[in-house]
Image 1: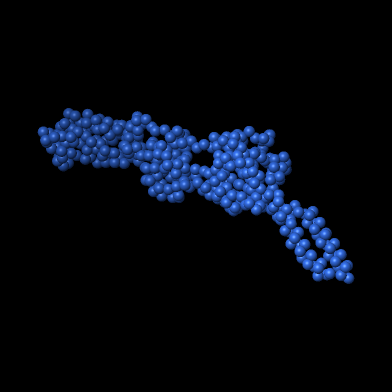
Image 2 (image 1 turned 45 degrees about the vertical axis):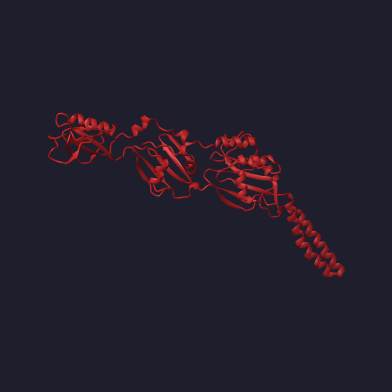
Length: 400
């Protein structure tokens, strides 16, 4: 009886082991193996886009880096010439002006109003004069202001000294040795706009001191988020340029002088990549606006798991522009939005790959995947077999 039971149990154990061997491909894994990913470059499945599998090399990394080199503000938005700065100080429609007129004593035209004050720059020989502050003047759409006894005075496109000279010329022969002072109270025509992730959006008038980019950001209450997470975009005419905020702070040349009409947009860009497979941790990992290398990215997820990772099976999944590289698989298939699905392969068994990883930049939404080593799958299978074989062996011993 015991012998028959032993035979039944033994036969069942062998059948179970055979079934496990036949079904070892169904053992759970964290993703495809290195061989399966490499094979995907040769397979076209219905309803899918053909993948490009590209070995990561120094040439590939440098070509991608050259295409993604950020152009600096100092190149795209050069310092304006002196003439442009002077033009920015000119009065425009909507600007508010304060006009004050002085006459030498005895005042004849404006002598009935105002207060006694010393003529600007005058000494004791000239004596006191009557200074009259006129009501605030707003430059009309036609670009003019109205001054008593001087009439309609053109102001748009002129600097305050030029307006002073024009008013003085018109008052000669009417007022006694007139002198005029024009001061800009509020500027509307010469201003920049700051919007986005700032304390408060603001329209900042540009003064004669020529405000710069960080001045405008400060006037808007600063950035809402940490410096490393912010990008500043400047729109000037048809030119749109953007730089990480910390780059602008670290390099004074990028704190460019602003020009009338500039629009500064503060952008919070939470860049991140995803790590999966046999890494120290599987997670979505944020990184700074200035970017990080693949070497830095791997360090942030704890590198490879020594007990299960395939050092030859490190992959970066990404969508690229069709013109990014000379693709190995022709014709090049793209997604509906015109991108090429690419898998970059890295072999960490090769010491040169560690230099390449320092040049290869990680992009937003990249997926970094490390496959399991073949031995890991064997160990998983052995664990499954042993977990079943031991109870079977115990049963056989009990039957005996």
